[in-house]
Length: 368
Image 1 (cartoon, helix red, strand yellow):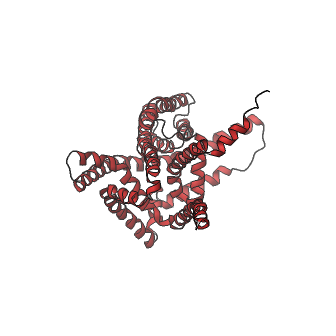
Image 2 (cartoon, one colour):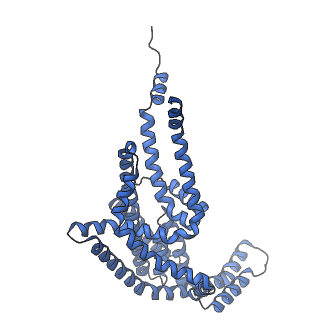
Image 3 (tube, helix red, strand yellow):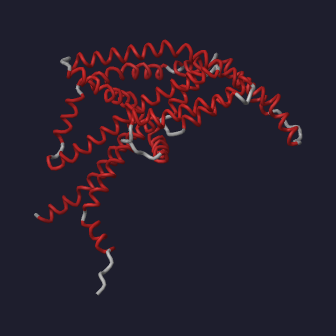
């Protein structure tokens, strides 16, 4: 009997490892259909605190969820009505600028470089790129029409897109309405011996994920607004597109600044044909980076996540390699949860006999 208990006790870590491997394998196999459910879960998680506040003020849970939905819908519709027409216009302008940039490189940049370096006359590689770009976009009618043709070219792809677009709000509504019930049910399933410790870990994970999901989203939106307004003030025609791209890329530390200042610098050079305006572009991203470091991140996110920038980049690359776009979205939350688990394992190790034995072994012997 004691031997059986010993085997079961020894096997607990093994069963935990097997369960983790099974979950990862299932997620990998289901990754093609996980996107709408993942997006719905993220939206429900973000909206739950607001629904809880409305519920605490005497509103029913269903009414609170409907109110949150109405607010999110109004915000999304207004954002689309304002940004989509501008994005269409600026994307078309971006294509023209790329074409003009290729022409400048072919007609001015390369000849000047050949003359300066005393290089022999070469073929015109940029002509082929210009012709390919022109033919591609003329036949497609612009990037949005090109994407629309790709989506609508397959009836199955179109049906899948419509189904996902319909599924996300439906799943979000039910998850948000029953969020507290689901959390209570999961807690009741936990073994009583580990419930207290699991709840502590879950609360710490919730603090980190909440800080990231809500805080980082606000930081990205704020940076996108700062970059867009700043580039518009400088006079850049592509301010909206480049500001949004830089804001979204800021999910990875310093990536938004690198991508934004590179793309905006090129756009400013080809638009104004002047190096001096690059100083204005650099100033916009410098101010944005300073505001993020000193005000936005400490105020909206805080120091709860505590992931090193190298860890962030590595986690995103690993997530993308294993699970594609779903993995990229899951990478940072999973890395933050793993960090919490490692911290608890470290504390357990510091309290273990193994650590105490190592400390005692390291103590020098007292002189006789």
